[in-house]
Amino acid sequence: MTMSRSLKDPFGREIEYLRLSVTDRCDLRCFYCMPKGFDDYQESVDSLTFDEIERVVAAFGELGVKRIRLTGGEPLVRKDVTQLAGRLAKLNGIEDLSLSTNATRLSKHADELHNAGVSRINVSLDTLDPHRFREITGGKLEKVINGLMAAKEAGFFPIKINMVAMKGVNDDEFEQMVEFCIEHDFTLRFIETMPMGATGFGAKDHYLDLLSVERRLGERFELLPGVMPGGGPARYVQVSGTDLRIGFITPISQHFCESCNRIRLSADGNLYLCLGQDHSYALRPLLRGGISDDGLKEAIFEAIALKPERHEFNEKPNQVVRFMSMTGG
Ligand code: SAM
Ligand code: SF4
Image (cartoon, rainbow, N blue to C red; front, side, top):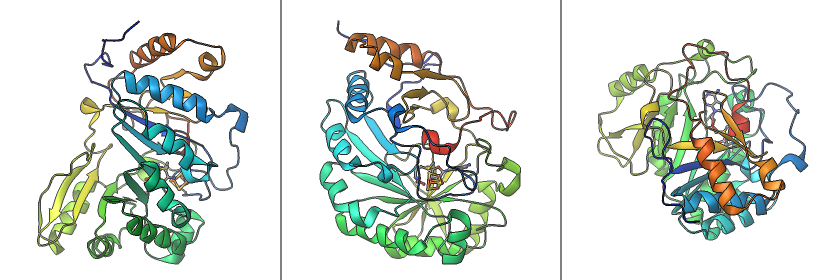
């Protein structure tokens, strides 16, 4: 059976981007993402195998999904993830394979990831202060900086820094991060905090409206309207006289649900249709029950039909009980 239907959800949005969480494990403990001391991980037998992941991505590729992002948890914690990247990069229809990482293990893997076909990377970095970094993540800043430099050396471009903007945590460092990104030719994206899971981290605790951040940066730097190819939901400005683009990802203050073209696959094989809602569709039992390739594609259509119109972070901030580390942000 040939599939000529496109992957359109009930609200007319064409789905062409899959975020693939390859593990729910992480070697850091960012306080906004995982609760302190958290170790209630999935059993590894519950995780999709590389063969299963490849099958699912191949089906998505045939249905029109062009972009895959490997994420987690920390994707580089999963053994041999470079091998998986190489397999996915070769699949029909997949034009863009990218990675979101905390960069702690990047200095070891940057070259091999680049050679495997990963074209772009995003690195989480909320502070340039080693003590603060330890407080936020429990880890060592030095490893991340080394990882970033190795990524640059390996030829990744663009490298995007994702900084979660938090009142009372890192709001005195935005200008410094801008300077750091100008110096190293990184792209900088600010992210609004989202209330996820039982991290005890609510939208109100440290929430900052990014419009106020943009206004503040405008007092120090001349900000021009900017564009970023493949920039996703971020709105960009460019710092005059430099190559630096700054993106603002504002799921809370200005949601971008009407143009959302993405879905998420958790490491244990659940498709999540919206970051801010619990609608999901379990693929693992189908994969392990011997479903045919056409049956798998039909299941994907059924899942897409469940995609809700928009998140409700503002109306129901306690609604989503899973952690960001399950679906990779
Ligand atoms: N471990 C990788 C990393 O940190 O980039 C990939 C997974 S992480 C869950 C993906 C992104 O989600 C990171 O940029 C992180 O800052 C963001 N994130 C996690 N919890 C968040 C929250 N409650 N609000 C906003 N962003 C969050
Ligand atoms: Fe780990 Fe990324 Fe979550 Fe931090 S944001 S705890 S690095 S998964």
